[in-house]
Image 1 (cartoon, rainbow, N blue to C red):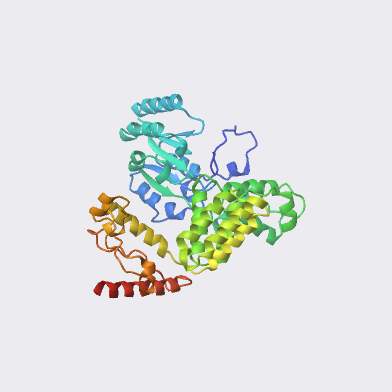
Image 2 (cartoon, rainbow, N blue to C red; image 1 turned 90 degrees about the horizontal axis):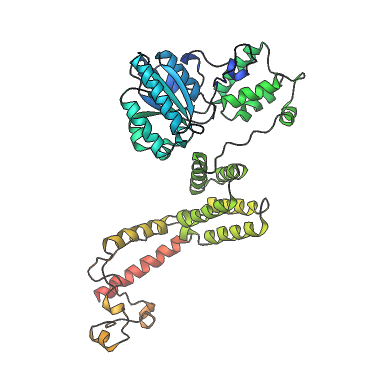
Length: 433
């Protein structure tokens, strides 16, 4: 995937796209990444100190990853080589390494820029290591995916990860002003339409310039409605198998947990408009009911299952309303993770005391030999006990009684806590007796 201001390789006499003409000539001209390139920025500090390590640029499309890599090569007097992990195989990589080796023998270093580096498999990523270590190449990789998940630990240990930010409205406005200066005229847009254009770019500088290039061909001044009709609507950035998938479901989950129905609906809508499978959302919403609401509102889980079934019966888009209704219910329901925490605590105890047998008095004794062994001896039938509660021990005899479930004072769990406290009091009294 090309990046912002990536050179297309056209001749100097050929028409050049707007994004190509506006490519920065020096790092100081790069817009929107002051945390890296401004005074005191991490990348600026590396350059000023004369110690530039191999790097991995992590950020969304259209924010300048390729541009910065190219300008780094200029500033450090390294030969710039660009490859894409999508189109490059092992034979091509070998040629790149060999050319870099010869170049180095002749006194010239190589900055190898690898776009979409996360698409290389483990063996290909490992192939960079010896050439990075002996100085044959200075590697700069670019990825839109989380390097922690997509890149080998060995590669990450030899490179520094730098995060590039999506372009904020102020940065996009700067970019738009540069384009207007290059064209020698203002965009033929009403002020409201210009603001809407920046929103459509959605933090992607290259997308903004491509949209502007279309608009500069218009003869009349367009309103927001006219602009929306003329421009193809940009699809929301959403990769169902990438970082955005996990980021957005996390945002939805935490909005529900935080009892914010409006934010929860927004993230649900973002995922649905991005093409997420509603069945995946139905499953995750049901999980939220179990994890974050639990017995504080036992009806929440039923609401989710009913919404899931409704979606299966209606399909899209009608069935998606049922999912939205479930999300609203969850966001406004009383919250408790007591059952979730209790289960995790019980798992810890089960792993620690996993071989302990149940106490003999609660074991059945279907044979005479088992009766002789004491199986079932002393068991008290709770229905025959006072208050229907015997207070007997049900944990292994060698194990201290565990307390895992700690209900909160919210919703239905308030009543469950009263029952729990009641049985604890009875148990204490029976045991003393």
